[in-house]
Amino acid sequence: MLTATYTLVALSVEQANVRLSVLSFQKYVQSTLTRQQSLTLAQLEYACETLERLYQACSWRKVELYLIPALRQATQRADQLLDELSRLNGLALDVVRRLKDGAGRAAPHGVLAGREDHAASGEEPQFGHVSAFCEAIDSFCTTLLQRLEKEEKELFAIARSAICGDAWFAIANKLLAHDAQVAEARRSGADDPAAISLAPRLAPPAAPVDSIDVRMPAVQLAQAARARALPRAAGAD
Image 1: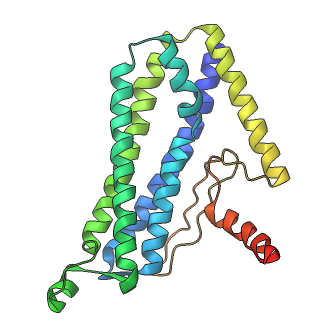
Image 2: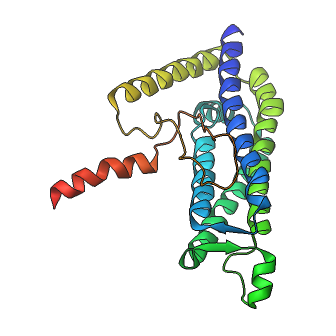
Image 3: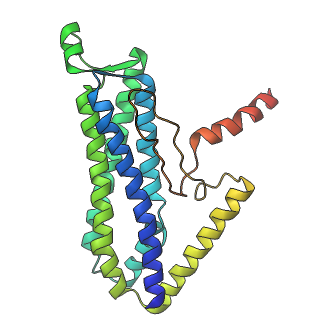
């Protein structure tokens, strides 16, 4: 059982990193965006970009990659819980898609206005109001936090009792190989989506807030990839 304990501790550390990232972004939205009458295009893009990174970070966790597949093979006792986790995942993804679509429709106007601004102008909002936008983000964060809590309190308990010793040993080996791959990719600068740390750009200025650090070694940074692609594209021309 020592291998099981080691594995669950390692997974718990990863869970804590994700939780901290989600809570940091939720705090930023609550302390900054919700206090504004309107949002700039830069703020909309930043919020949607961070939402997508947080969602992708959750999708690339070791719990998703290694523990859940092993648990599905070991027992059917977790099927109902896994269905609930999938439902929460779907809710979070739906928020990401809706907000990205709404931000895209607001882009030509360069701003997402508040309720008073839309009422004064007599125009229908392109996506919604600032309050609705922030409420959707809060819903996304709450959903991810609920999933993390269910995994730690319920999924880990089932896994500990249902997965056999050999399977735990195999999972632990995969975790070690995963970490080694991450370290190697970082040293070589390879574009490995499972090895690039998420480090979102700083939030557009609105009020003093702590910088948000999404610390999951999980997903390739889209901005970094684009930055590396631009010189190659220029050379091709």
